[in-house]
Length: 314
Image (cartoon, rainbow, N blue to C red):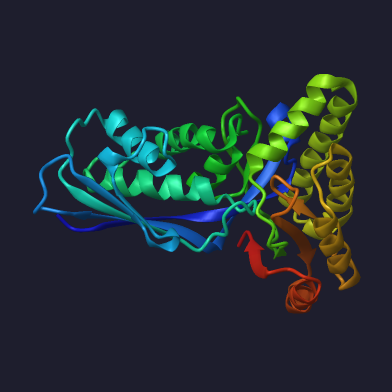
């Protein structure tokens, strides 16, 4: 039985993070410059049902049978076996690697889950459809984030720009005119679950002002989609700045993110904002293609531990 390899991209949220948890729209796009990869290899010298999971990037190796059921890697594997109604698969080794920074807003957890689900189901000769892959990855995401929006598993599974409203069918859409984004990593790990949970507590204590912030954020996402589909991404800059101000009001930005946003704008970016859970992780800057390198260098001088230049569309 040949080894099966599957990969999944990272992602950034262009508009609508946090508000998307409360039913407002968000726009997310894949980032194929970074990837999670899973390789499933037959292990014929072991008894059936024996699954060895290796994650060399974090120095991890364990048999599936020795892991608790809610372990993220184990849960991803067992969810596939349950979906396919396979009690004892042929013995195999699953090797997981990733170039996506962890807890940085780039969808590392969802990408690993999608790669595992695809590799294992294909290894078992029963590859799952996108809808099934996304649904299983969402269940794994619950272990990471408690109440995830569902946007990470969706955009990563479909590997296309996504307009996402929780509870509604997936809407992928076309980018009429490609545009360039520079991603700057603060280097501060910030699990999404913490920022989401803290904001939920504030919303529960006094929902009205946060509902207003969420409404404004959702309107920005709608306006942004019209510009992207209409071939006017150069007009997205002011919307990014407005979205960033709303995220600051929600309490999910940080001094480091605010500073990198400022650095990007001073270096010539058309717009900039945090992307993802906030409190650390990544910010994004919309740039003209010829400015991408200079903005990336400015972010590095400003303290970004890593920069990625990505093209959206095309």
